[in-house]
Length: 210
Ligand SMILES: [Zn+2]
Image 1: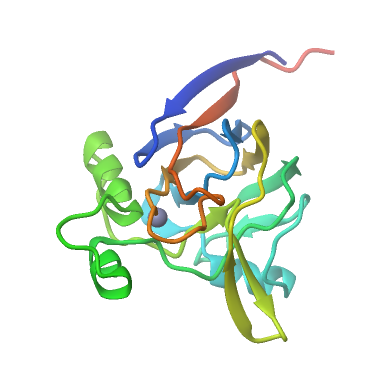
Image 2: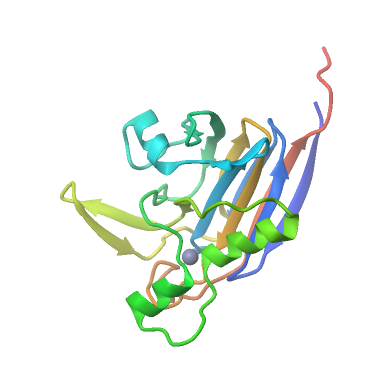
């Protein structure tokens, strides 16, 4: 089987959505370290069906997923597999995507602020795919931890330059990311500066041979 590597650079504060076929893998690469990446997947045969953090929690009965875990949709179909992780391994599954009102309401920002929700919507428009909602993302590299079995706490991402998470599509899907533009709290590393990320996609284009 032959793998063709496709490299996509996603600029800081921006989003990207790509169509994956079952069997394709994608590495979400933290080029500079410290960057949170909101991550979603949607079924190609029904873009209203989305990778669900809540359903995936129940599938494994834990809050943080581990390599080897399947991620499922809101209809319980397996959509991605978490294959490999070279980062410190904390990827928030609880926080909703940032949106324009969240910057105003929580952080007092005046005027429009780039945000992951609009980045996702923009990618649906760019690909001409019907948009339904912004599900809770899988916040790769985001170290919001749970203490005392109940208390949530934001920590700066300790992901290093070049660390990546490898995922495999288990069904034909739209795979979307947003390099989170949060620069008002410290989730994007100690300096809080949003940075570029990259997607390394390996497409299963070949045929099985003996
Ligand atoms: Zn964000």
